[in-house]
Image (cartoon, rainbow, N blue to C red; front, top):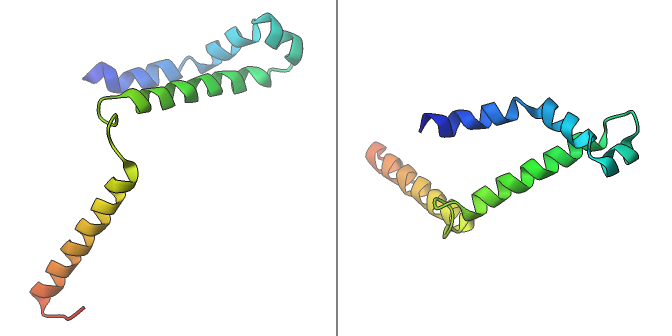
Length: 92
């Protein structure tokens, strides 16, 4: 459990190394020349694809419809507010 939460910080801490490594890829180095402007974009794109894939295929969100979750929360909040108003005698 502890490694799962800290691994994101450990992996992200090496961002500058990943950028340097991406700059060493021949076709990226040919485009960038001396300025490293494409390497960070490549690394961030790979990271965002990995994040999206992990969210898409994780067991916690595999069969979850986010729009239904939001609707359930709004309904629950409205019910809580109605109970609070009933207890105070205030009419909504």
